[in-house]
Image 1 (tube, rainbow, N blue to C red):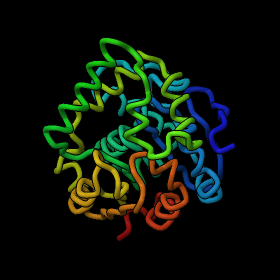
Image 2: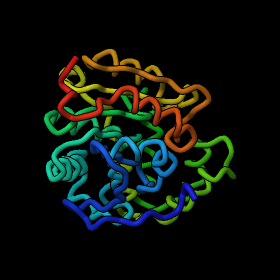
Image 3: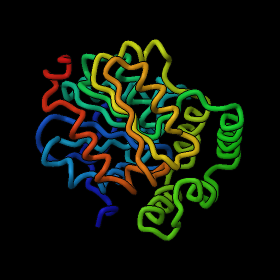
Image 4: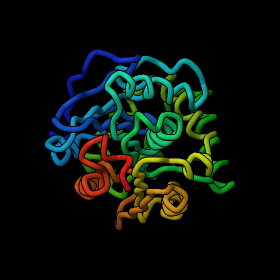
Length: 266
């Protein structure tokens, strides 16, 4: 039941998604090719503490397409959404982490805490070349066989999480998927100055077995953020929000304040 299709709220600022729970607001942003349901395993642990807003990325799920090909075209609707709800803790995974950190840097008054899960920071040249090559294939050929992607994400390709991701990748809008992946592939993570000026609690989580969004990346970003903390999950890889949901949920509960008003306190 974790990966069942969730009911959507009417789009706000072009973003659709699922809303549940009670308490301070928390906005969760998934990665490229996925959808709100990717957070399904974390809902039971978080909905009694937070009002959860599981949004579909622009061009994914039921959200409107992005208006352009820059990261800011994905950041702007999330920022507008936060303005509509009066701010929130913001949690992002993979490309969603890029967006979450950018919103936190641009609109700190709207972000009470930020968590970047499996976030990219200063890819190696070989990693950058590989991800940009994949982006080029998507741009020229449309949606591709998800098998290579799933092999990078999971060790057990028959697990419920892997099968759910396969279905989402196959159902993703080809144009929306390709546009988001192109932005993801050509972005190298937050600027050092942006990290150094984050005013809110900032949590950087990745898996010990993650070859692309590595533990070293998370530790480097956390070291620059004034209230930064790095947390590396043993035996986890890229899809930690699905495979290690309880551990990530517990970390969010420990590090995020109970109310937005407390976020400025040391």
